[in-house]
Amino acid sequence: DEVKLLEIVKEYLLKEGYEVYTSTNGEEALKLFDIVKPDFLILDLMLPGISGEDICLKIREKSTVPIIMLTAKTSEEEKINGLSIGADDYITKPFSPRELVMRVKTVLRRVGGEDKNILSYNNGDLEINIDEMSVRKKGSEIKFTPNEYSILLILAQNSNKVFSRTNLIDSALGYDYVGYERTIDTHIKNIRQKIETNIKEPQYLVTVYGMGYKFLGDQK
Image 1 (cartoon, one colour):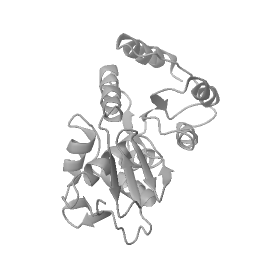
Image 2 (tube, rainbow, N blue to C red):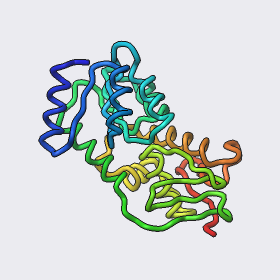
Image 3 (cartoon, helix red, strand yellow):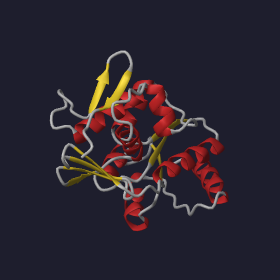
């Protein structure tokens, strides 16, 4: 809703060749989202009417489009909360427009993978279609954010290998990812809620205490 900042961000993205649609309030943004069906969303949290957090939740009910949150909120807990409701990245104000463009490019690179196969685990209980970037549990498709999908895929492709938080950030999110290591724990929690039959006794994503996480599914 800061018009000057909005115009600056728009100009930087236009220069990179992106088609850009803008809105200064939540209700208008949701209507525009349904019309445009964008490939990426940059979301300010402090908006009039509907808050950015509520917009994110509404978007996540129907789409896994990548979302970067812009906010003046700087505490780690607030950032963790933003990621837990479905954001893929989080930038605090003031920020560099060039940094924002770099973050957009990084997330879009992760989304644009071109591998063409299906990974199946535990006799088809869990399936990852790399070509479609989709995940199915017992035949039903589950919605994942791009970051959640990237983390699950790198762990699944390296079954039984222990990844530290830093390893996961470098391998799944990229060396130019800027964020807190602790956000990996939030992503793992979200993934477990989606793929585990019993999150208290996970059969896929296992914590190796003091070291990190590993994937234990049998590929069949």
